[in-house]
Length: 350
Image (spheres, helix red, strand yellow):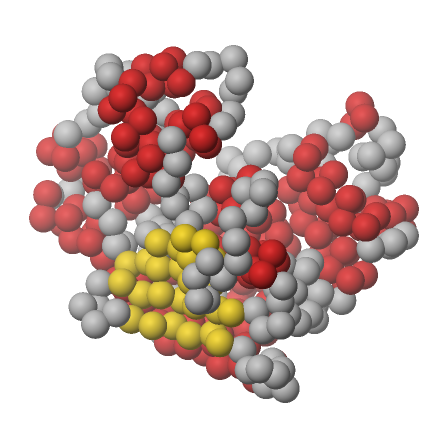
């Protein structure tokens, strides 16, 4: 992958941020008793999105990211409380990222980050459980973390923090790291919308530690970024890591996802047709997909799952209509597939 500027990679991202995202930051600001007007001014807002309803959709990704950064500085915590066992001073992510850039491969880079985290939290009692494990068959890697002294009901925040961290790792290697399994050390929350944002697939609750698993092949991937790209990325890091991580990498998986699109009532390209569209041999395509820890079938399943989630959020569509839009002639087949993808039936998901 050529090391072009991150600004070039970011072309085509949305020009506006949904109002709900900006309002969630302002609600956090209010909950902590912070001076809203001063923080908004530092973030470059000419108005208060909570007081001016007509302008709530006017925040750009850059403004949203500046607001996030300003709030982090006010709170003295770069994670905005998502890692409630300890605060993370502003600037920590940049220092960790700089140590990772020279790691060569993602596996080495992640071990560096784990060591960095251990040093920052060395005085905690009990000590932090933060590990990167590779299963014996070398097919799956697991990143685990247990928030020490954190209430059980807040452990899902820690789990979300692991997902955010993997999004950054995805950007480092230019590949989407697909989470295959996730477990949470806390109980199932009453409202799981936040976790669904990071984990559309099934999550096991009441586990011993918070953990995310992914293909171990990603650990072999080379670090694709340099310091200049990191500096550019950090300007929009809050927006990309929290909401638009798909814009943070370019890979064969992402190219295939673009070819598939969102129209599932048409027949999707066969693997052979895909090789023609991508101008590569079947052997090369399989090798590329394997190196990214995925397959064409998995990409298609994820595409249908994400589209199903999006359509189910529209209360005007029945489950049968959603099934039809996804190309399922039998609604019961859609029910089975959706439960396999997310761990819930379409009705329970709604």
